[in-house]
Length: 71
Figure (cartoon, rainbow, N blue to C red):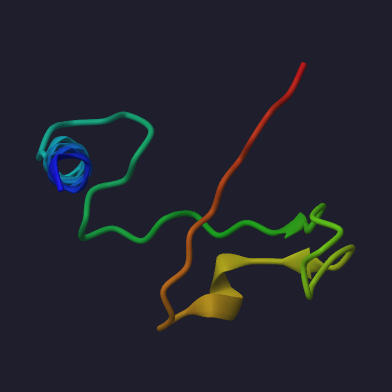
């Protein structure tokens, strides 16, 4: 049970830090829309693999975007 509590505390702390209101030059303010973009889906196991995808396709739905980079 203590592991579950630690995990819950870590998740809560991450959310609180991530939701803190401060000026971030990369992130637009909450009342401003993020810039539109589109990229080719590189995930071979994705339903949209090889196709161009954009956040506009997911308006009104919960979505997460990850931009990984390996060297």
